[in-house]
Image (cartoon, rainbow, N blue to C red; front, side, top):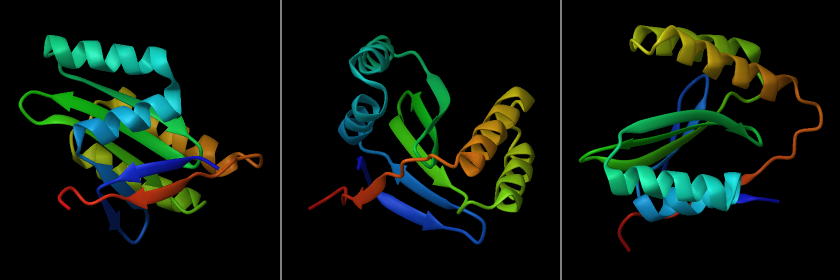
Length: 132
């Protein structure tokens, strides 16, 4: 079973958002999720100072990876507890945040794919504090 490291977990009534704001932890998760090629692309974008974001799915999570200067890297792994209504609520919340429609639609589509995937292999989350 895959394990992803996060810095904090935010529970809401409709979703759980596992957040990572440590650059190295985000890079470790990207490598675990998508492999060395994706890791190289993320590292290059960071080196060049290119702001970016990606919306993907992995195991039971919709993964949003972002880089912004000076904020650095972040990753949010969100799950909707297998409930389509929860995914719809998140869709409405993101629409209210002025996300581009195409991104909201992709996020919602991925959430629905995860909810409907009967062969899903779940991953676990390990909380890693920012400061020890």
